[in-house]
Image (cartoon, rainbow, N blue to C red; front, side, top):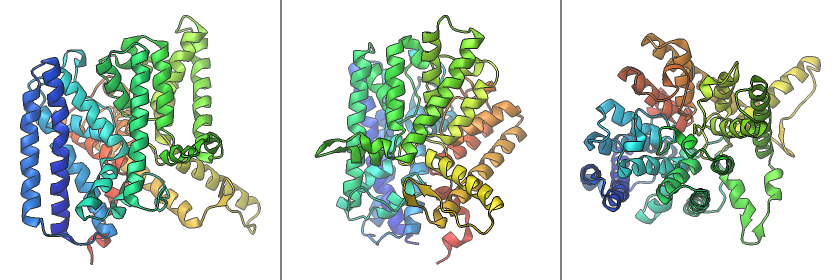
Length: 485
């Protein structure tokens, strides 16, 4: 293991990450909200710490292997999540404890969207902008951005890319060079963000709210500048815009890349993709269930209003964004639990969504169907196909392994939370919301996470990391084989 090279790269990344403290400081100057001092302090502290790690190891430029790539990814998220907490620690508004500062930072960077802050409407604009900026960077993965820059510094990036990109198959690239792939991803990401911000602005948001909400929408993060979230604007048009862009961000970004080529736009590519069709089918079924149940319950005044709330909340929760127009936890019967379970599916592989990913869910169903057929015809040979492509058994095995590890981490985190005297509903939903990078839960965490214990917050931070790194990337570090030469 090339530890000095790893330390050098971590120092470089910390130095690059310190630049994120400057835009919020500029926002503080523009709005004269007095919140800029904390970001200037955080900038110099993070820059200094990065220099301390980089300078003694500046000549260490060994080639990265897969093991180093996994370790750097984990260090990257944990170290930068910790550095990201500095502005919250230094800031007087909000006045957060160390635990709350780390929780807020990790929640933002992992795009979980769980918050411990109450009174968002009265916070300095700089702090609000910083929270959304963290989500925006975390949504696509700061590592993917880094692999576009690091080759210029003499550092290879393929190992980092394999460790970071979500999904069961990680060996495919959209372009021959990894740096070009990362740049293509970020170009698409940036264009979608601009389009989303413009749509929000034209729908009635002011420029600041439009930019901030576009960050958290395309990142599928769920942070808002208002305590009432999207419901504050009370606009069906804004609800539709947000839901549509959430669905776009929940689609595999390689599909966007393939659809928007130099030859023009080819929408047929989307409908040839099995995962995309499954994602849309899931949204339609969930929306119909919620609409019919809410309409029969007579909660809302009209069918149009019922459909508006049902569609928005289904998309928001199932794609793991966590925005709210209504308190979905107060909906009748089984709907809150149904939506929490839908977050386990999440978005497509290669998207900014959380959860286990739609493609894994599809493969689990196909594998279950194959086993049923084998019970009837034990000697028959059945292959699992996505479209016209037969998948090798190693991918199916990997999906089952991922599902088992995901379930194990979920159970362990939930049991630990219950041992910390958290009730079962709160423990279940908080673990699901953190592991799926969803945000809002049920019970004591329906609105925010301010009232749970510090120990529970640290458990949930670990769950956020497991969810963001898709379990295996973090879990592999706990195996003896990883550390053996």
